Length: 302
Image (cartoon, rainbow, N blue to C red; front, side):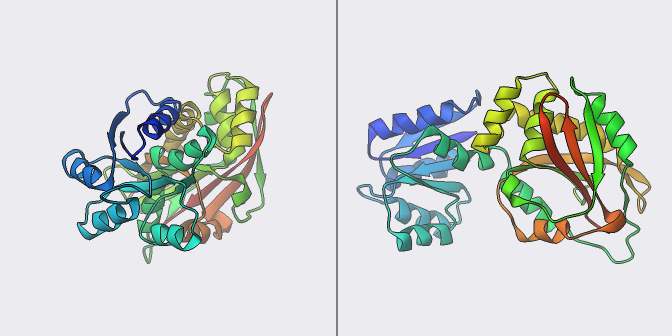
């Protein structure tokens, strides 16, 4: 992933870069700029994935850069790391599309909480779900049985996982972020089903896959941040259980299209969470020696 750090303080550039490096992603690339004008030139040539930008800088401020990027239709994620405190100005930035605001001085934890959803595909996950739609006359997806989920998950984890079916209920956003698997018919990108692991289920299952320390899982839950390794482990579990899903209309099994971290509520997720009956399954997951979490499986196009 390519990061562009824009700040007129060289010391702050170093601090932001150091904070990003501590996320544990080894294949990141970094460039820096001292103001918005220099940053714009880099954006045009280098196309960074994420810009972390100060607000007050000579020649071109951060908000001027954001407006110009929007005017020139240069798509990229931009967030502010700034001492700007005016609520009206910060609202303007968010209305223009700023992904986050991190206030100076900041902790690494605050920076990570802002950046991780972008690194881990939260935005792409929201877009994929928002674009999914129902079809009239659709026969729908056959969801796996509880026993099938139990067998598949326990074949992977180092600790016993007990799945207990629960009544359907709306998603509890107190347990964000979620890890969400998106399942589609092979050869298409049409999302047919989703699997949602809440924060606790993600951390405990992800840890149990490799027998990682329970203390680390609990620390991730306290920080409300799912590390890269646990996210990848959850993705591995979701890939394995993809063979359990069957689409009646096409007569094909589903594949894991992708998995994402979902960091905040949004309309499509709210709509899907209201499904009931044979369109969804809810489980409490009790991961031995770790703790309990929740998994929800929902048929999307039904």
